[in-house]
Image (cartoon, rainbow, N blue to C red):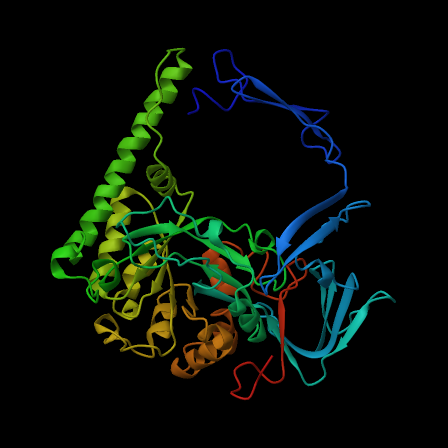
Length: 464
């Protein structure tokens, strides 16, 4: 539609907005709107007044009712606006601070100013008006980041009607009132990576949200680099589907999953070539019609350009290697392999490709693909140079991700240090999501996303 709309050029449809000033200025008001060349005046709001009428009550009785709307309109209060912080500065003092990147600070303090970490250390002085939190005997760690979640989605997160749906977007259906947000916060989780489901070989794009309970959905969106969900194995094949055998859609086999990926990216390459040729023709001054716009292929083209991070639901080693090889063939990188319970078998290949891994500590054997899982998966992949995180994939496990990381320390047989284990639910998922410059560790300049625990977070008795 770009040839008919979108700019003020001769020959285009006369859809025009007339403003009283700079359209981006706060005080500017719209004065007139033209739709298909027909003007619509923007007048003052209707005057307040009284209305009368006849209505029927709950008991079925008739009666006269009047209503009035006199006086000035009240300003609309946005949801959550009542929880504005009372102080611009907060000092957490006398705590054991688990910085993740710079070791542990005993009797440490963290100064927070305007939502950012202003200072960390043992000798931090706040402003006189700062709020002071005495955390004697407590442990402070970075806010936990869940690298794989399906919370806060309105209406379901699986567009399972087609094997390829990169045109749908999780960011469009974020729910700010999902109680899972509140419960996750109670477990120290402050950020969640909300993914499309795994019913499709290629699903929709993702959303990274900050868990700001009481704030509207648009304020939850973090602004992280865009990602997309792919899926391999039983789920996109629908191996466990209850559908009749004669009503199953393609693909139904491993080879069908691979071919679906290959066909999709072959088509995306063709689409990119068509648009490149069109752009070149326009630069030469030729009057040519643009190619047909396709939102699915637009998204896949951005994957090929490296603009969208690929997150792949995967379990078994042969499928993991297939995905890495196919990505190499088409010239893009796999960002993070999700679940990846057989990653230990192909850790060398994962590291060579440059992919990350996000997995469970000891959640397995719930389907055929999970039978070969072992508790040493994370330690083996980390030893090979893979950046590994633990995730919940569950509104229940997200409340105890700190224990998931603690169990990984136990299973590592000394391969992981305490800081390595802490990174599994903090800095490493931040790296995987491209947000580690802002969150994931306790450092000056980063967002003050923190969790205060009653004991060391790896203790079974610890709570937020």
